Amino acid sequence: MKISGATSRRESQILDFVYSLGSVTASQLETHLPGRPSNSAVRWHLRALEAKGLLSHREENGVFIYQPTQPRENVAKGELARLLSSFFGGSVTSVLTMLLDEERERLTADDFQEMRRMIEQTEGERQ
Image (cartoon, rainbow, N blue to C red; front, side):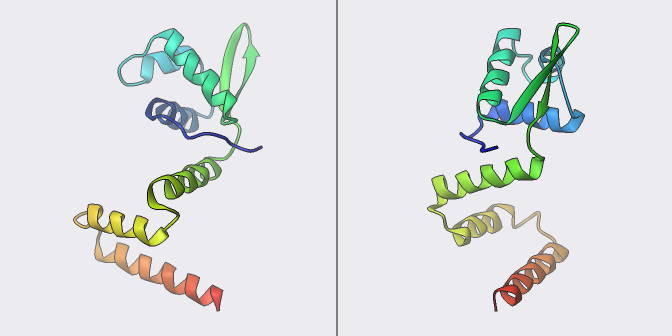
């Protein structure tokens, strides 16, 4: 299934919640989302996420239960591809430069070592 369209902040919050529980109802979302959105707002976002191919629903006893249509990793890859294209002109180097600049204080020696290992592995696979 092709996923279309970027997600809004609220849609990302909904997806995080759905992935954490596996499936949810609109009532659960109303109760647990930041800012306590209205029922109509939650349902609007759920319909949008279904239209984008990110959620589907089944009905049980008159209640719609929403679940993801794709593994979280697939959705993350799609969102990352859109971000890369929209804000960084497709440049992986630009993304990494920004991440290193913004997250410098949080990165540990182990983080840098792991990044070096990943780069070396990727280089080795390309040769």
